[in-house]
Image (cartoon, rainbow, N blue to C red; front, top):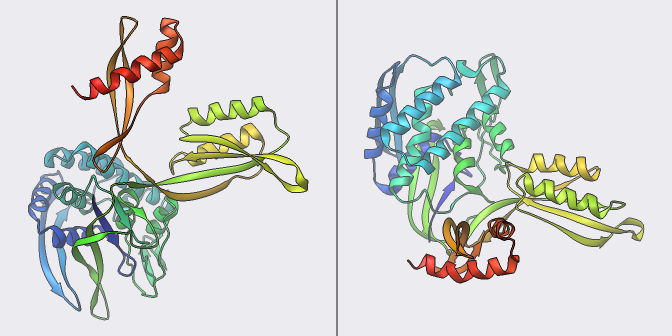
Length: 402
């Protein structure tokens, strides 16, 4: 399976650096000129020209240059609307468009937190932000890299001082650090007194990649380097990306919540299960254990994703009265999964059942119909659940082979 590794451990990451590295990796530039033309057509943007050059200062790399003349938009809503117009003009896929919106949302939320009076005075409210977000997605989509596993090493954020609207603050860039905190991204130490990771770079990394401390086990096939516009002692900061091949199991990040429960009724635990699943928990389970003073306890565990875990912690505390919840983020390897709704006939009637298919190595390893759909059929027809499940399982292979 094809994979992509983004390596900002030393040089950090910015939108233009990622674009330049992808150009170096793929050799493609045409999507960038299409994107630049769509941005130049926006109201208030009179000029938007992009060029790619090659630089060599220790390592050969591509560097991006942008010439822009614009009237700044007045709000984040204006910027979001402008990006939607460009997305439509360049024909970005729905998957890539959703990623672009998530990146922009992270930028807006970080800036609003840091600048409550309005972030439009800051650099995020600019047409080149649209380019920095959409440029990497267009290049990755064209190269077939957007749907594959994407990994990253912890980014170097940099140091020194960073200008703000009311003076300078110590590095790293506050918005970049804010985004790393929002997504619990580990960061790399850097002694360089310069900004290495920009807010846009951090948001791209957060929404594109699984960040891990080391390179994944992979067979590298090609490598690209992108140079930033800032230099340290005459040397530009560099971003390295690696395309390679990995096994066909997909790695994803999950959040595990745990709390110890004692002196609690089974009814309370059962009701808590229902609320957790309704709020989006992937799985909930209880493990019996022995706690302090040799008292029997139950370890209540919840598997969820990064976006939902704060809400689930509140449910745990509200329903169980626990005073603390352990939180840890872990990778897991899973088979490639797809979901579709199929029609099945049960007792002379036709129903739609959602089916999850898991594949590895190009072969189907599991086909699982949705329990809730089969339960609804059983209740509707007034027949045993196992009869419904048997009928559905008998018909699924036939449906898939049509």
